[in-house]
Image (cartoon, rainbow, N blue to C red):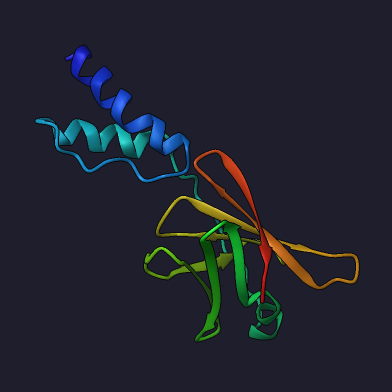
Length: 138
C-alpha cells in the first residue's frame, strides 16, 4: 500500500506544485489518486461580500499570465468570471474584498493590482501555493 501511495505522489505532486493539473488517473487505484489529489492543498472556506457591478467593471480585461497564456476577465450578470486562453470553462470570481476574489469551483484566488493613479494594471493568481502575476493588456 505504501509503495502505491509513493507512486501516486510521484506522478501527481510535481504537476500540482507547478500550477498544472495532475495527470489523469490511469493507475489501478484511482480512488487513492483522487484522495491524494484532493487533499494535497485543501481549500479553506471563504466568505463572499457584496460589490456592485460598477465596482467590478474596472477589472474586466485581458491579462497576460505568460507568453501565449492569457486570462480573460468578464462581467456577466453582475459577477466577474475568469477564463484561460487555453480553453478552460469560465469560472465565477467571488469578492472577498475590493481587490481580492476567489473561485468556489477550484482552489484559486485572484488579487487585482492597481497602479499609482488607481487604474487596474494587473492581477496576481494565487493557486497551488504559487503567486503568478499577470499584466493587464486590454
